[in-house]
Image (cartoon, rainbow, N blue to C red):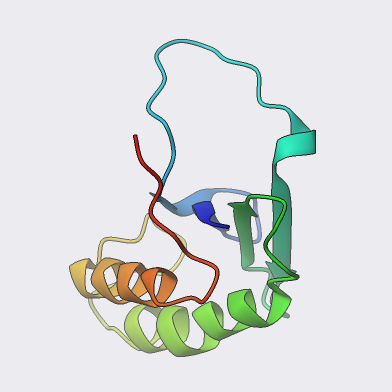
Length: 113
C-alpha cells in the first residue's frame, strides 16, 4: 500500500500545494485507470480542499486528511505571517513536516522504481 500524491486547493479551486511520493515519472500524456487508484477527499468549513491519491489497499483517509489540515496546514501556513493565504504555499517547514507525516503513515511504503 502507498500514497501517490496530495493536492491542496483553495475555495476557488486554485491549487495551493502539490506533493508526490512513489509516483512513476512519465513523459507526455498517459492514461490513468481509476480501477488502480483511490481518491480521498476532505473539505474544510473554510473551503480548503485536500485530495490524496493512493493505491486501492489504503483504507479511508478522511481522518488523515483532517489531521494534515489541523496539525500541518493550520500550524505552518495559517499561523505563519510570512505565508499569504490564497497563494501557492511557499513554506519549506510545511513541506518537510508534510513529507515526514506522510512517510510515517502505516500504509506508506516506498516502491521500487
